Structure formats: structure tokens, C-alpha cells
View 1 (cartoon, rainbow, N blue to C red):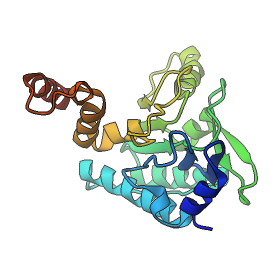
View 2: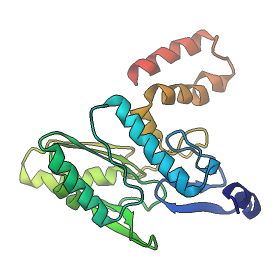
View 3: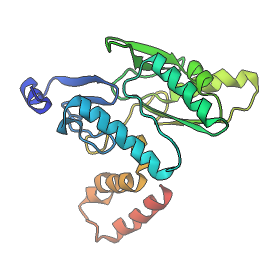
Length: 235
């Protein structure tokens, strides 16, 4: 049946999860959470996955329209390796961006492994950050939008600190190693990505939900006007 009807039939005590890294929902309170400002339940699961990937690419293109972007949906380890090697070949000495959306898969391991699927989507396969680093090389920038993302940063630091060599790498992690992503239904599941790619929209949503609106004073309040501008400037 359709996802919405299935949820209603299953009831409030059951968690619902698609076998896709970008779509994971529980009935309370996450069943309507967005990804890239898209409601996955407004369309078929595969179409939702494709729409989210395309939208993320468009969001990055707004910031760097001259760059070339390639979206891999539910890739295997072999596909990631091929993509990284190809990107480095064509980028030459330019910086390569690697964005990992880890929603719906296990948290990174203490050794810095992220999770992908096998070819049949029947099990998770770990990908060490050391392998990713060896394929992508430098200069590079990584965005890890997943819970416990600090695990990956810690593993990457430990990997290169003993060598004493300077690595031209930038790592952006959504949270510390002991933290999980925000679980509020009012915000998209990819809050970190939204802050990076659509900062003003995310700042206004955050202000609306958690700022002065929670006190019931409304936008006409001097407090709200005072709060709004610092948030927009900082972001």
C-alpha cells in the first residue's frame, strides 16, 4: 500500500524505515521529516530518493555553479571507489567535495568506518575513512551529515597525526562522536546540510520554531527583530 496508508495501519508504536540511507522515519515524532526540504512520503520511495539527490546537487550548485557534481544513490563500496578515483583524475589539483548523507544507516564506528550497502541491499558494508582518503587524496573537503560524525573526524586525525605531514583536507561533521542528530519533527532530518546549503531558510525556520515564537510574542516584538538579524549575520 502507499506509505501514508501503511503508516496509519501499522500504528503509533511501530518504526518505519526504508532501506535507503536518506530516508528513515519513526512515527513519533519523525514520520514527516524532510530531506533537502522534500517530504519523502509525498511520492514513491525511489522517486523521493532521486529527488533528494538532485535537490542536494542543485543546492551546492548555487554556491559553486562552475563545479561538476555527481550524485550516487545508495552506492556500493566499489562504486564509491570508482567515483572518487574519477573525480580526483579530472579535478587534478582542485579541491574535491565528498558529501555523505548517513541517515538510515548505522552510526560510524570508533575506527572511522561509514556504512554503505552491498549490491543487493541486504546488508551494510563498512568503508574505512583511510580507504576514502586514499582514493580522494588532496586537496579535499568532506561533509559528514550523520549521527556520531565526530567518530570519523577523530579517526581521520589519528590516521595522519603520527606522520607529522600536513594534509590539505577540510572535514565538516554534523556533531560530536557521542552525539546524535536533532530529532525534532519541525526540522529537516539533514539539519546540518540545510545549514550549509540553505542557511537563511534554515535560520528562519530555527528562529520560528525555537526562538521568540515559542514565547508567543510574534514577529512584531522588538525581541524578535533583535534576534533575527544576529542569526542571519552569523549564518
